Length: 135
Image (cartoon, rainbow, N blue to C red):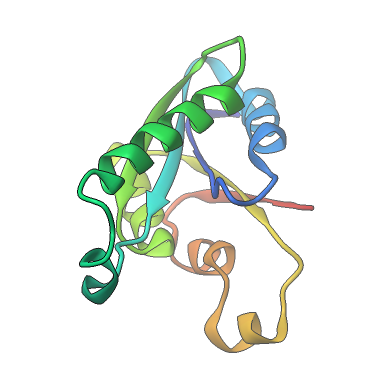
């Protein structure tokens, strides 16, 4: 069992509810769950064409979506970071002293074998246990 679990949410994937349920089962009594979503930065050439408040609106949508996935229990802290997901999740886990990361993984495509998916990067670089959920 774990005292501090990070549930890495890719909100465009369908693992959120399952990942949270797994984290709840793995959590020690009195432990903490942190849901984490990482927003990849937009290239500067795209930012120029985006509406002025688009980033703030996106963060509000993300917060609402994370809140929906946590559900009625509201037993998890929501954190949103900016950067590369594989790197930010592992860095944040180390920074807060997490002892487990729960992450979903999709069925890999050919490009994933060459570039590596976010889940595989986290598995390779995390300094704590990683529980991968397959859909």
